[in-house]
Image 1 (tube, protein in one colour):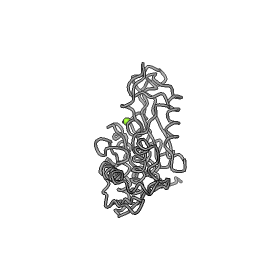
Image 2 (image 1 turned 180 degrees about the vertical axis):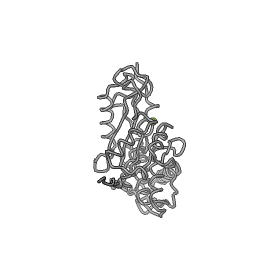
Image 3 (image 1 turned 135 degrees about the vertical axis):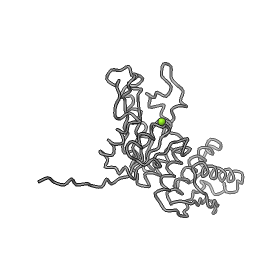
Image 4 (image 1 turned 90 degrees about the vertical axis):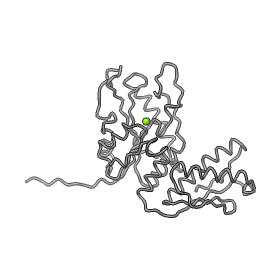
Length: 286
Ligand SMILES: [Mg+2]
C-alpha cells in the first residue's frame, strides 16, 4: 500500500536580504590596489548602511527569520578566498545583534561560483547563483520557511528575480531604489503589510532634562524625525515633547513606532556626540 504524502505546513516567514548595498556598503567603498570595485575580502571594511541594523531588529521583532543571500563571484575570480568571505560574514554577524547582543541573522548563504572565473574549482554556473533561486530554496528547506509569507529585499534585479523564481510573490520582492529607498523603509513596508493599521507611539528621553530649553536643538531633532519618517514612508501622526521625552506617534503597528524612535535616537545621538561630546538621549530604549 502506498502511503499518502504528508504535507506539513512550513512555519516561519523569512526575509531574504541581499548583502552588498542592501545591508552593507559596497559600491561606495574605496577599492584597494589590485582589487576589483565591489570585491570585499577584509572584515575591517564591513560597514553597515544607515538604518540597516534597525531594519533587522524591526523584522526580528515582527518574528521574521533573517537570511542573507549573496553572490560572491569574487571567489571564482580569485579576489577572495572562501575563508576571507567567511571572515567578512563573521563580522556581519557581530554587527547585526539585538539589544541584548544576540545575533539577528539566522543564516548567511553565499554563492562563490561564476562561469567566467579564474579559479577552476569555482568556475562554473551554479543553481545558487542569483538570479537562480537555489539559495532561497535551500534556506526554505533547512530553516522550515514558509515562502508564501516571505519577502526579499535587494538592490539588484537579480535579487528580485531569484525571489520570483522561488515562487515568492512579486509584490513581496522589494528592490531598493525602485520600490523603497533603503532597507529600513523596506522593513517598515513589510511590517506594516503584515499588521493592521493602528495608531501607536514610542518615546525617547533626553539625557539631561535641561536640554529641553535648547529650542534650536529640539527643533533639529523634530525636523530629523519628520525627515526620517518621510524617507522610510511612515505617516507621522504626532510629535510632541512631554517634559524631557519626545513622543512619536505613527500610523502603524507598535514595532514601527519603536523602530522609528530607535533610528531617530541613533542618528541624532551620533550627531550630538560629535557636536557636544556627550550623549543626547538617556540610555532607556524606546
Ligand atoms: Mg546588492
